[in-house]
Length: 182
Image (cartoon, rainbow, N blue to C red):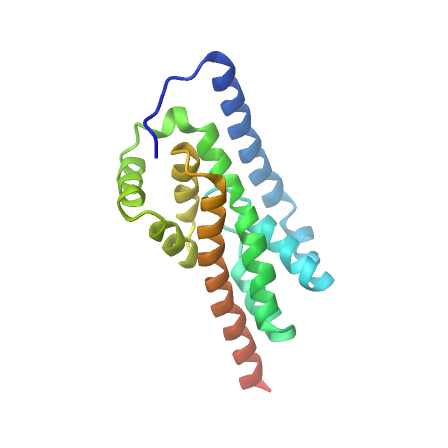
């Protein structure tokens, strides 16, 4: 990650607008969460879209892994995990973009500085680990990656590895529960 440089007026306006847009998306997803759940009826593309939307919120988790478990009991769990992990990865762009937009404010926060040191020290492993563990803290990793100018392709790759591994676990657990109850 690079050292931070001061922003000119246009960069600050763009970053603030980006941050506002990410939080507006989060609010819209929360308002329409019941309608979003109907996407699962469209099979793997629906699982993919649902996963994007449940992961696009910032710091307010929606129960995406619950849907992954349920869909793992209905569809092939491997492909459910691929669709869900890929969608979750794209959904996490909201945290990354919030980091790009909120870079001005994040630098002074203690938790931000600690997590930034952890990501710098261990490279991609914290992103993979935080993506694997079901928790809303992954948004913070996205903030740091965006604010710290981690290349987008690296952020997406490491996020995909962690998210897909997590979704494999949840999809196969869902499939196993369904077999046990049959």
